[in-house]
Length: 411
Image 1 (spheres, rainbow, N blue to C red):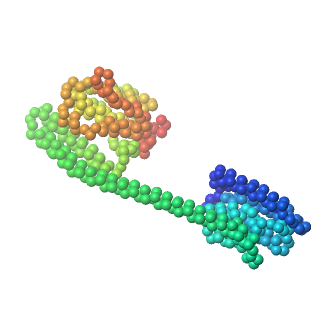
Image 2 (cartoon, helix red, strand yellow):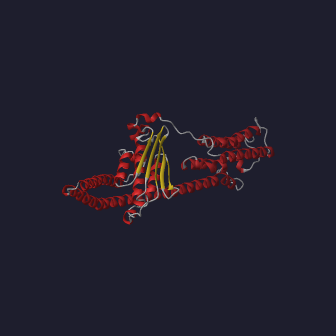
Image 3 (cartoon, rainbow, N blue to C red):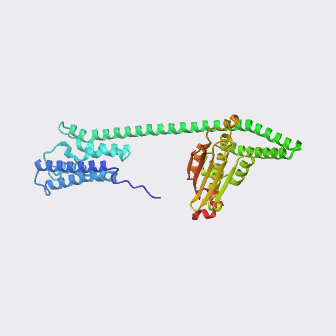
């Protein structure tokens, strides 16, 4: 177990005022001992001056060694009292101000000790220094008031200031704790609302999709025309896929998960070629260009590219019927460049289909691309078309990506 060592000085401001105070009181002591009348003791006033200067400059160590400095000043005050009582002139001049009965640095020291020591220790130190300075066994108007001003008053002011700082700190902590609790309550409320919406989505959308799948299955069984049966099977298959994706989405909403590279990594990567074939099957002229090796990118990046192509082709079907589309995937050691460009619409969009979206598709794509560290770009092109593109990295450090893409660490 290692103990935490106190800093020499908490801040530059403390360094400045400690040294200023030490030198100022050292100069005051030199002046007092120069003007004081002394007797011819064995050491004269020099010993007392040296003791005062040592006490003055010990102030610069008070933040690192507060207890040792405080008791050293108390011991010096005891020596000065003993000299004044038994050998006048040894450590204290014969004629002196009352504050020289204790080291002159005592007021500064007592005002700072409440920041560094517990209240009981500060009261003990202040009481001892007050007793030595006031000398109640020989009370005098020339000593007692100065003694109280130089010992008791600084200690009380220091204790008051420290109590006020602790109160403000406590109020600040309480306010921060209340803010955190309010944030947690808001999160809980959002989670409850998310679960409620997930339940409603599951009940309403699943019911409609299930009916669609059942009707498509029934149509495929009862119809004798092969194109109708194939179309019914396509509708049934897409409905089943939609139910699976809806179940995953509802699980995310109920669990309160956020969209992140880790949650993105929980899906199985799809094949963009399948999306292109689906687009062609509904009558959209779709060109597909692939350059490079798909194995150069991690599964997470491949999934992001798949979702981008899926959303872009869906938008073409909704908003630009009759347009031709070019899907381009360029794999390289640095990552993957994706581009889905469409020409101008050749027909008027179906109002019901065009209004079926939430308007957040491109924003969701941008978020998904940026979460994996890529750059997203979307906007109209010359001639009335529209282009959606992204520059994706080769690897995203997710747990799933690390397991499924052993070579990613070296990229």
